[in-house]
Length: 66
Image (cartoon, rainbow, N blue to C red; front, side, top):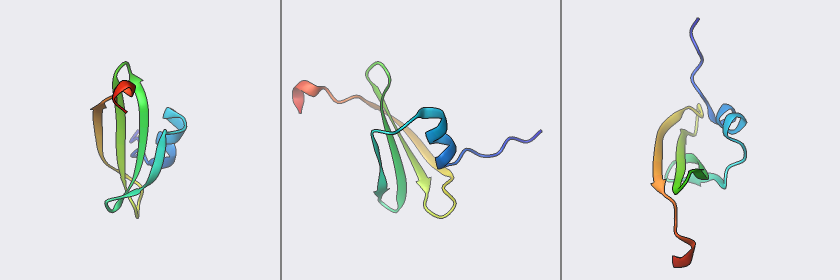
């Protein structure tokens, strides 16, 4: 059986509410903080089909430097 591609709604269903959800640089973004200790996750979706365009793992910001 072929599995459907993950879209924005399914990502929210699986990951929970994002720390940030919005439009930026021609795409829709979901950012999830602390998906692993010290790691944040950013997912960019295509605006038209809401299919995942890329996923980026980022070092979590150190709150002492904010």
